[in-house]
Image (cartoon, rainbow, N blue to C red):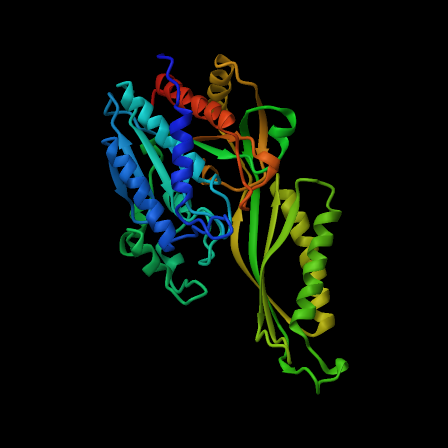
Length: 418
């Protein structure tokens, strides 16, 4: 195998270049799903891919694919990439770094005229992050056959924009939506590079994390229905205040998560809407998004069951109606041992320390694992910060991850015979 190396200066330049698309006045990243900034980022990426002579296509779920043919037409593709959408006021590394290192790998292969047996496919998935349409990991779930056309019906963002219209603006096709699904026979492996979004690698001074499993994520929308009334003339004994009930429900959820014996079982209330949200009206309805994460299905179920028990008691005592709508129920997913071993071996050949670790965040690789051998490489996050403007990874660590990605892709190309 040729001793190929990524170019850290080119990577750093592209991180900054792509990072300017969607940057807000405070320095954060506002490149949420199917917004003008996210559409601009897509066009930037497609232009770079076409410059490399790759065959670029946008599937019906608006995922961006770029293919480099291999020498054996009978072999399935080795895929790699991540996503370019961001959370509101996020950072420039989350998701984007995985796409940029995939782009760099393609460029190094082209520069060196390196042949491969398998086709190589770069992918930038649509809507990985939680978004106003309420459908995160949208692109990878569609590719894995977990999201179907019927799931798009009636879905709108907070401004009333239909998801089907937003999807068309990004080059997707709601009418052919399920054509985006890939079959297991089409893919030999999938590898994703991502920032760790935590402190484990940084605290240990280790530049490479090899992910063993991805956390399970359960997310639901809770609606608390009380009774709106005059804030001045309604006595406390006569109130059915949806906001006060919702507050108690949320605190009960926090208590359940804090009391759970597993440290990795964590819960968050990340989105709240109060109606009618006026100073002189008792709230009649509150909606909030509840999320649970854990390393096992059993631990998530334990916490969820205990909160449901407490929630029923609170709702009954306060006289409100609690409605619950499932948004996401993603099981914990183990990563592929063969791909992980290849990544570990290539890191060791390069002299890079590495460590195995679980991912406490969800990723597209979790859904790709239902289709093909999948694994992830983590890059240390400065200060453990992510989903904020201060998000950062050091270019030296990024270079090492890029080299492990590149060498692992070539090693998989040699080793896998399907």
